[in-house]
Image 1 (cartoon, one colour):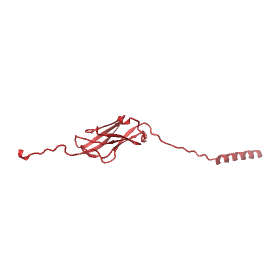
Image 2 (cartoon, one colour):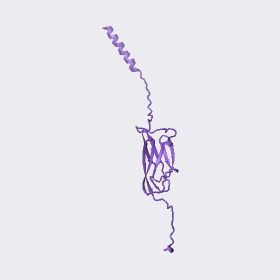
Image 3 (cartoon, rainbow, N blue to C red):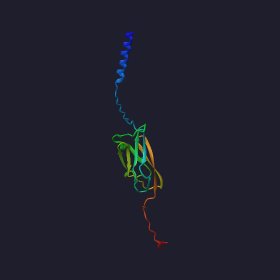
Image 4 (cartoon, rainbow, N blue to C red):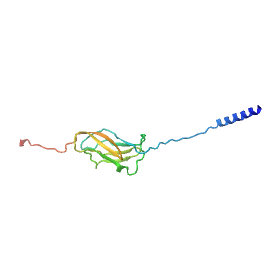
Length: 152
């Protein structure tokens, strides 16, 4: 019986020793974005502009993965895969810029000709497409005609 008490006592001490040791575990989690799954275009200011004038605000193209994580760094040559179209869009004047931790920015957006009212700007990156609706207002006159009242 004394041997059993001694054995239990040793076992008890061993458990105490294990419980007194504390292990510090450091776990760092850094989510890494996956492959591109969607783009979302946002106009940073007013969506209204006059025909023939440059839109004052930049249009930001957010590039995210399937979980909504922003793609931190777009691949080299990504601008060549970014297509922007729209009725009357002056595409030669349009500037496409890579933004770190976001995606792209569209600057110098300008429309000429066509009807007043709502216009859609179509932004396509690889197989992903999003649209920005802009409001076109009357711009400056492009031509003035002087009428001679004596001709009547």
